[in-house]
Length: 505
Ligand code: MLC
Ligand code: AMP
Image 1: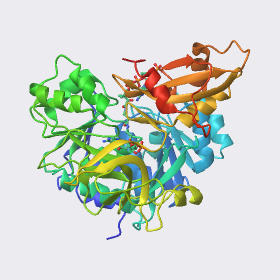
Image 2 (image 1 turned 30 degrees about the horizontal axis):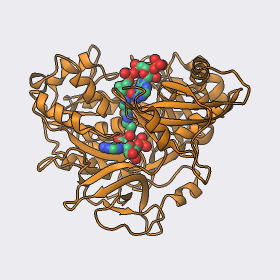
Image 3 (image 1 turned 135 degrees about the vertical axis):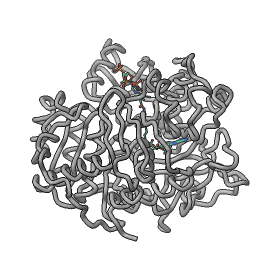
């Protein structure tokens, strides 16, 4: 069946459209009727701005009901939604706008002065603003427009969203996700996680990544659920609101922070039926401490931007610590050597996958797309894994040089390039180090040019802050005489990780 994702979600909206769709604690609640009307007005607005199907709409805004309505409006208009992390600096935004060439860019009223020239330089036709309280020129411009906007037809392969994901070369690539990709993944999760009438989602994830936007929001909307939308993860707010929820999703940092809160226990979880974790490895000790403290077994799943969700521990049946469970329906996974060759059963190799969830390629980058697919259509994840005799997938590491800090991906190459460009620096190596809060944190080992006395650690950090999102900036910068290399001249990051592993202990 080929249908716009919005229509497929709509099929799950409650018959009584007066029921709550989005509740913002301390703010407004919007019913499903209001969600349809608000996204309709915004879809109309996109039309009046000349946005045609296939045009990109880039968005860097704080989390709000309106941000979700804008996403839905893009679906309805056939536009390609392009969400951007609020932590990105104007220098980073310049790259995304230049690469994606959106017709419209929506930013916050506060960031507009800094982004006006960036948008103009990228040739963006219209710059609009959206504040966290629904303020700004976007909603103003949509006021009074006809809410009955309808929904353009979309084929399964039509692109619904582009999500940028960094690469090992240091340049971000836009992963193109189609209506069919997102619809199939939402339907699969809805089914395997047993979504049912009355489910309430407590939503504390950002809306600009797969986890918060597609896994959490699409699945809950498809269920016609009430979504309690928090602007960010805040332990006190979670403890206050968790008793109203039946489903909660988070990155492992959410769970370690909950465990660190004295007020957290079975009482707070009394109505929750499902805790989901993903985006980074959940430590077995966290899994077990959570079970002991709350009586709940966290369900860990595994996914990535290019493919949405790939595997999940079962809802019924054993949820195994240290595993990411079994492939979702219609998704095939296999383990291969890095060169694509066979690997004996049960051994470690690179996880490859195929299914209706797998993206349509990188935006305007057919070479990179071709590199990451096997001739028989399997996508190479870059994650090292093994599949045990009962089919459970264990993610044991990464073939790609990637750090995952608090659920955000950081590609060392990008940070190394920024450090190496600083005066007085000869070279650097950026590594992920164990961190009690973020799981992994970014650390940098810097080699100064011979005879150079600067920069010092503070200067490196200050310089990087100007250019890079805060979560990418190293939490620790150390200096060394040289980097360890193998006979081929390749920096031995494993050795560095070993040497500095106690940094954040
Ligand atoms: C914030 N900071 C981080 C950070 N988040 N540093 C390292 N890693 C992180 N993840 C830094 C900021 O730059 C700032 O530094 C300081 O911490 C405080 O910022 P904050 O915004 O107030 O932090 P906080 O609200 O505590 O955020 C932490 C967090 C957040 C864990 C709640 O990072 C988060 O929501 N993470 C979830 C990411 C996510 O959704 N991932 C899904 C990707 S999808 P300074 O120095 O400037 O003060 C995907 C596919 C899949 O991976 O399988 O799901
Ligand atoms: P992203 O590019 O942000 O979509 O991040 C995807 C990456 O996150 C995957 O390739 C994995 O390396 C990692 N990831 C996601 N879920 C898990 C998990 N449950 N366990 C371990 N790694 C995970």
